[in-house]
Image (cartoon, rainbow, N blue to C red; front, side, top):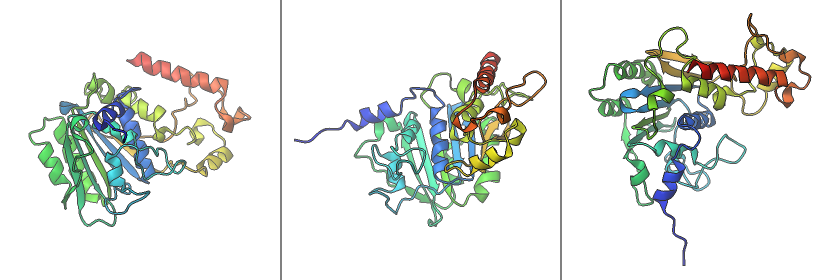
Length: 309
């Protein structure tokens, strides 16, 4: 007698966004950090309720196995991972399954040892990805050919995005991973992932995903401290040496027709005329966590963001 696994049911459960629709982006950012990326790019594709996510990390190796499986195969598998607990952000290989809650999923990847890019397209992966699915990738010398084929006859909002990817990113991308998710299964897609009506000076501060990345993702690591927030120099230096802290990765998000760089580190309230948060320099046990005054300041910022909606 052997246990029977309903792969479709398990995958459907894993790909449900239980906490927040933007959790899928948080997971992809974590994967990019684990892959030692230096740059991350996020583009919302509003006309098809999806997005394009690009990083220049190590890429998904299709040849060399780690812990009995290649990184590429682990991306599509359940309960198999190449990561070691404590060595990266995630190791259960479940977060990537959030990408499969869509009508079309595409992954394009390349490592430094590859001559060509590898890619795989899946329609309705929640239903069609099973233990019998052939996930063998195809090859291409130019990933733009894949994007061009997928986004034929795009609208005037998507066209500038594709132009930016082709001219400013792909021409210098030597390795990394491109994730395309279309018809993402979540209500109010534009509300969470980008609203085209938010233009002008404060558009990014009012963007839900922009704030979600800063507050909840690895890119908003609370341990990344800055002098302009009145953190003492010795604390800043000490935190930079902690394993896993990386303030050098640049994350760009397409907002209002152009790429905006999202600052790394938690968005502490800076000193100003209206608000004067308690100076971290006066907190004796900063490394133990934020002070009561600091938490009050953070709560005030969250309230102001909520009010803006």
